[in-house]
Length: 408
Image (tube, rainbow, N blue to C red; front, side, top):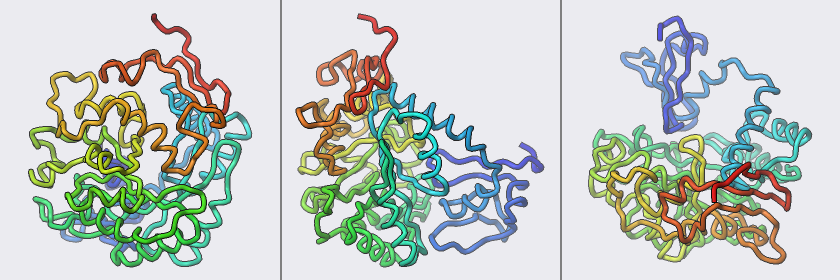
């Protein structure tokens, strides 16, 4: 890739990117910059290296990337939602409502019936003032037939792999020592301001210090009128003394089993584990401990960071290794979920997390959002579940996917 070719490459964690010299020139980047949050244009001797850490830094370059046409974006979204429905998903939480997202999904719904329900949560980033907080409250009124804005997304830290998580002690590189919000008290103020106005909050917190601060910030808040719960996303390394606080505070633990099985290894030879060290890596992705403590445990993918297919995610949650990779050693197998727990993470617990009393079960009075598997997800082997055909997907009583042929 030559210096005259403008290109922006997102790294796998979604929190960092690489930009070529030509892309930096087009974006007007010729040195370090100061951001509202702890983002960084990485420089060496004052010269940008092309490494961009966290979204505020990445957005300086992404803002000058030629946009797709509205038609192209609608087509891509149509194909994506169709693929998700074919994989058995009937609804999704989209941690994004930036730019023209509302116009995009409104235009799409004018053309088709969405094949799944979408629940959006706009970002609240460092530097957000009271006027912008009130705008987030107003956005909660937006929606369509199968989509709605219902929540807000915070990020209190970044990633362990990128050295931008918030840990109680530094990682092996001396990094991950600070929150994304330079003054974390501003995060707490914004979170409580919105929660007190009925907005369900979602906080990305990966490091132990970030998780602790998020839990402390959510303490003693009144229940939301909608019945939804506040939740913390990811929860990658968790000290013992925080495990039972999710249940005690009625905070949802929203976790992604494939972040563990795809990106870490049982022998701690991966970058994530090496940065944390054995002690902190040994308290990784504690799905079973959180669930056994009585908390609501919602499972997901964090797509596009990891594949969205719930079948492999439920399988990995039971196996603590990649489904279909029989030679992989399980990663902390004591954290494995039962088949029922894994299924509940995508059904009843996910419904409780968003306060949907009419979802998450097949019962009179519930909406007819149904997925028919070719196997029994409670009885089949997890490796078999990961490849099992989806016979039928139904949303609101409408068939949105039907398999052409399923072998007996």
